Length: 278
Image 1 (cartoon, rainbow, N blue to C red):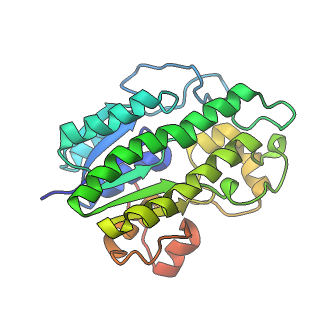
Image 2 (cartoon, rainbow, N blue to C red; image 1 turned 90 degrees about the vertical axis):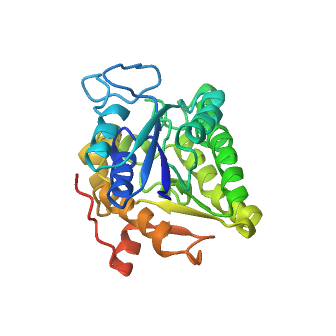
């Protein structure tokens, strides 16, 4: 039976690359996110320097998945709405019949996400808590229960170095703010709990740090100067996508659980090819 991977935040960047990597590997896809077709809701949405929404939609990625010969379902999900997150999981199971892999990649990317500490508002932290902590829990819990009942499944939580280390420079100079760091720290804790509580029922869970990845969102958030200020190399979205596929297909013993997988050095160590360049 064909396996199904569900990828959140699949409209562009790492999510898009991950969806295409799994499709190339023979998975059918469930794509979850806010963007459908040409419609745009700018509320709490990341914009480019001209104030326009970043390009990309679920429908566009779905068309690419179909070109690869795989089935695909698009389900609406807004991380700022916990009910929609739980509904997305239920809809995914209703449409696809099963979900073998869940990639929690979607994030809140409002313009207030990386404001400085002294400018940070409580409302921003409330949105971060909903998007990084509560909604992923509601989505994951439905699908993890489904996986445990079937006796197998994989959850991959896409985190960030911002959740595990201090910023190299201030947020205004290309580092990250407290809201983003706190949100990603919450993401980094989820996989270990899944492993401890559901590992005996066949559910694997991983925390993945993509490193600096040259996505449209990163360019819009900190720009080329900010990327340079980080002082580290960057990779295309296809690299963390390839690492996630490797973990699902090659780490059946779950060796790389209960730790953060740093995608870029991990890919080099394991000889993982970034085959997805679509």
